Image (cartoon, rainbow, N blue to C red; front, side, top):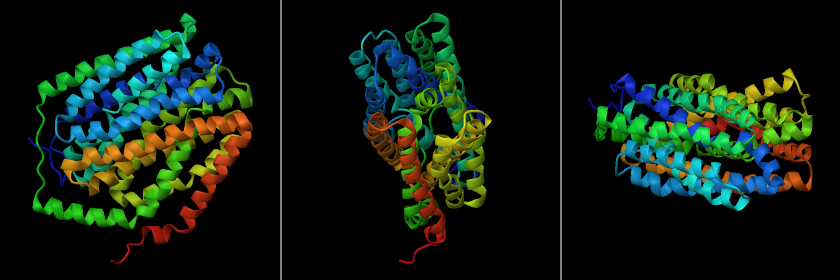
Length: 401
């Protein structure tokens, strides 16, 4: 039965379950760099700047791949794109596990990034077309559970294997098995449930025109949300290194901070999506975005212990609640035949800007110190938060044409 664009999805439960699993294996395959970065840094004698270049190699290629791959996904099977990408991520990860020099890592991580670009926009577009407006936020939020669970487990898996074998390469090798299995599973999904072609009715087209107008009305809100997202992404991978250098914690314990930040998404993403279905996208987006700057400052200065665990949890709640709300907002406004392309543009902008700013943040840390650098980022984020809170009424008030 074809999916509904206006109501509750008629797609079998197998669909959302399959995408939770594929989201899980996608992030298991691509998420090993950050928790293993302290070990990679020590292995190759890297500074913060060159550590950031590794992150950029994966991030820049992931961003550049978004536009052509997402545009192609609007014309061919989205699930086929996802299956090919998962298999490619697994193969690239095996290559990374055999790298012996820094300059071997860079192109291999770039290939992994390109393969990873086949997932998010096609997956979000496929699910948005399978679930109507009334249930779209909850569906996209539930889908995030797979990614959040992956990030909760990728650090202990990678670090546990690395600790047992004494090699970060073995950690990467084990992680690569997951996307290979996921790619084969998606091919089975395609065979079991053939893809349906979604055509928009005239009523749906009118709804999309109205949604586009609403999206224009809250454009400044989206801009602030994306700016806060950029700050978060630029410093995200440095958090384990910050905890090692600032608080002297072990590499293994610091790597688990990524699990804490992303694992909370198991709760935060479905909750954020469901709340946006009930109360509207904009109010939930304001609430999740306004806390970013203050939380960065708290992360910088709270003492190590339960206080920093609470801050990391709140930071993760904000990070994960925003994602399905923004995806749902774009999906509400964009016609089905262009969703992958537009979502690809959104991911392209996010990935490319963060890939450029991440090594700049590393350079800032090298030139100052971790505390000063995080303080500067926190002040910028807090200024954006204040702007958002004091102007929230004008940002949410519809404009007249």
